[in-house]
Amino acid sequence: MAKDDGLKLSRRNLVKAGAAMAAVGPFIGKGAGVAAQDLPDVPRNRTLILRWQQPNVYAQDWNLWNGYPNAANHQNGLGLLHEPLAFYSAFADKTYPWLAESWEYNADFTQLNIKTRAGIKWSDGTPFTAEDVAFTIMSVKQFNTKIKWGANVEPFVDTATATSDTEVEIKFKVPSPRFMYFMTYKYDIGLYIVPKHIFDGQDFASFLNFDLDKGLPVTTGPWKVVFASPEQKVIDRRDSWWAVDQGLVPALPEVQRVIYLPFSTEQDVAEALIKNDADCSLDLRPLTISTVLDQNPNITTHTGKEKPYGYVDWWPTSLYVNCEKPPFDDPAVRWALSYFIDRQQVIDVAYDGAGSISSLPMPTYPGLQPFAEGVADLLQQYPTTEFNPDKGAKMLTDAGWTKDGGNWTKNGEKLSVPIEAFVVMDDIGPVIVQQLKNQGIDSAYSDPPDFFDRFPNTANWTASLFGHGGSVSGDPYFTLALYQSTSEAVPGGHQVNASRWKNADYDKIVDEMASTPIDDKDKLMDEWHRAMALFLPALPDIQIQEWYHRIPMNQTYWKGWPTKDNSFVNGAFWHLTFQLILNELKAAQ
Image 1 (cartoon, rainbow, N blue to C red):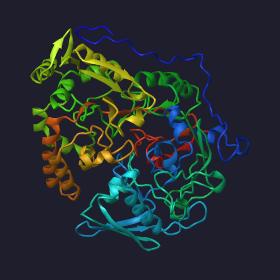
Image 2: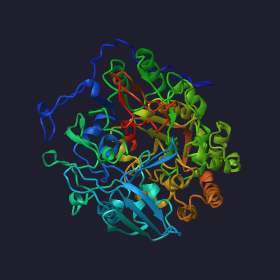
Image 3: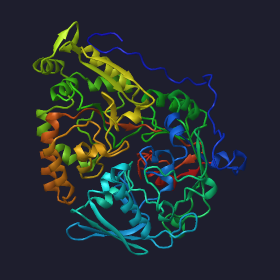
Image 4: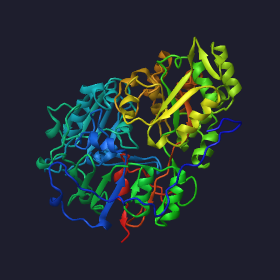
């Protein structure tokens, strides 16, 4: 890439129709618990084929059907097997009581009473009761930071007790007005309710919950695992479902089989979509998805055939730098890097303009807009999206850096920013690297296979492109909590202080907000503004863009996908709200 007044990049190679590639279809190879020939036949027009994540993920978790170990990932089919107490759709701004029929806090939010539905059974015939809920909460509390969500439960919960078969009483250590919302499934957040009769006595951090011959995993939902291997997962519809019996949904899903196949490469997946060998996939980059839309008229997106080909996800992305590693422990260095990045150019070059800039680490959803506006004065003082190389150069100079042979150096060491990410950042990563190089920063981009092992769970990285899984409704607490010092102990890819930034005064403000009722908007705004007055000068990570889910949805075999004209939930099948999509999909033939 040439260095000049503007960045010059060639467009990435697009998928060509008729390319000499083998079509990707369902492959059932050697697995566990059942042989391929033992699986019942399900016609293609009743089968949903999904392309998700890279092959190494399947190799790691194909036999892991417990959501709590650090290596577990609900996005790869596991989430369907753990039904929630409730679902929340941010797009519809609606909560759907599920295993829980209702819930109520006491006046000071120190106690939560949950009423679970009667008449539900686990798939092995054991009744589901309030005891399963109480057991789950207390077990997660006990295992604490050894498992996912433990650090979200232990600081708040004192006791959780089943006072009858359908009643759970949760007593809190401190007022906890957000606890039920935390347990509710939305995006990638929610507490997995597990069967006590299976998990009692097991180590939540290592129990696989997988033995097809013994019927594991059991579930209250309409699905069962029938095959799993490092190459794919196959989940079939069960014959009955309590949600139908109790009138929560009108009928069983029309999908009879869900097949999860690896994402492999974007070109490979695009070819499968064009040939109708896949029904949906992980979101694609704009230049690829526009080609897919041109080549297969049955494929649509959230915005149809029009840009930006998707919706704003809950996951605004940034350039994270490890705040514990010199020189990135210096806010001046972080701010200089921010001033060196031309975000609009990143979007124009990498996405053909189909994107938007993000100034804060939370999405621009309607409920959060008042909070974005509430820090307009701070953003004017600390402009997180400004491209201003002169300002960046002055900050480095004032911090003792000098330009030596075109590179910024200090004490004989180059300012080096090696950026790591995964496949979905492969468009913007090289653009940002070139922009940094243009300003005298030694930088390179890589897509290491162990990225998710290194970031954000270890300190063994320097800079990474990633997103923020925090607030989605009218409450900024969950975004602020991402940057608390204590949150870095949480395993997994969500709700983690990935930047490894620490500020004791900030921590105190966020702890204060944790006990503030969600409807006390004035107090929330005050706490939010005080927290951001500490956050913005420090710039724990460098804001880049809003993340768009540009999800290709194939209507050859399935209709009823969520779109802007039917926005009942976000369209990501890898999120915990996937069941809401499956309830709406109808066979097209």
